[in-house]
Image (tube, rainbow, N blue to C red; front, side, top):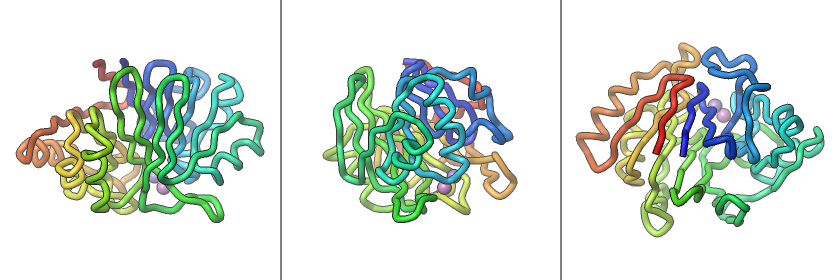
Length: 219
Ligand code: NI
Ligand code: MN
């Protein structure tokens, strides 16, 4: 499995899964939207820094957008193929199962919800938190929903958890690896991922992998 961090909260897994493809207008973007390949695009919510280039990539790649129902309908209305889920729901796709999990955040679309994703792919379990504040039910991601192999956690603060809260989330979730996202894109969400690393690795058992935009993590 090759995980590629494309900047802000955009993560590509092989050429199969693409999370929150905000590339156009993303100061940290490590790829142009026409350079990425995906069969499924998982969208945590419709704020522009997450929905981003979803529809144009989905249409060009004939990819399926997976999101909460209201966001899926928004994408469908713009010509994308979609699969709507909702909080607490789980569905088996051809690559593996996706559980739509809570995110405490706005959805960016009327009547909608933001979400995170717990994804089974290639024998690994990935947790993509999206934008969220810390909440104690994250402990479910360890047991009974886990174990989680890789957790993508926002650390930029202001709109989401900061590094301190993300370290607590990591303690609760206990993934093998934490990859910080959603920081340094703009001054308002500047954060030092080495502080997250120091805290998480002191608490144990997780390891923190810090990826620069464009960097890969293989496992
Ligand atoms: Ni947001
Ligand atoms: Mn955001």
